[in-house]
Image (cartoon, rainbow, N blue to C red):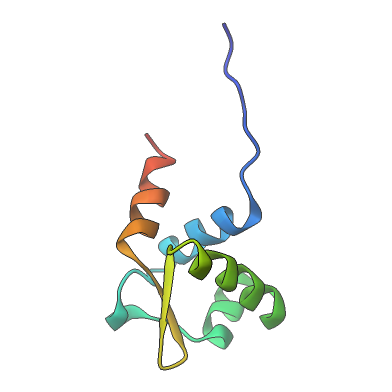
Length: 81
């Protein structure tokens, strides 16, 4: 039996990026513009990914800044196990 690869949705890759740049708590939350600069992505693409992650309860928003929820952190870490 060999290793089976499963496609990872773009928003999950984006979730990993948010984790890697440290948006892991309310105190470390980032605006769309800040995330856009870190990710080298257009703000509209950032917003689309964030909306998908918010609907999955992986990201929260407060005062226009976004951060990964506990569920999001668990999702990211489960990809490495």
